[in-house]
Length: 109
Image (cartoon, one colour):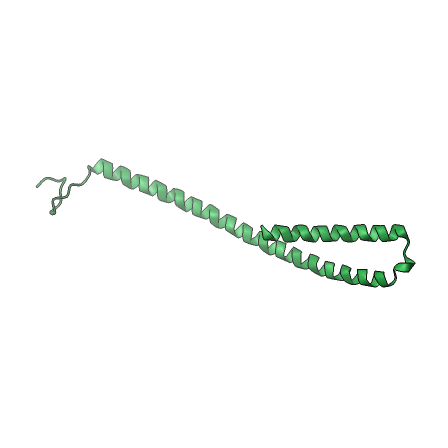
């Protein structure tokens, strides 16, 4: 029996070819491990981004609720405000609302 066959009669590739295949498999494994590490780092960064955005959303939601309460109070005392003051207040409230909507949209992505 020659060195290229086993007891079942199956032939094996030459040793050089087997070493080349093993080397290719090892290279591919190393590439996959590097890719996994990069993906794990990205996953951690994205989780931190989500946590930060959720905190920001909570803060802004709290501010929005406070502003809505203030609007209700201002509506009750609206007669005492000038038109310029009313416009400035509406502009500021609109900015807050747009910022909160932006944060909500970012969380939805």
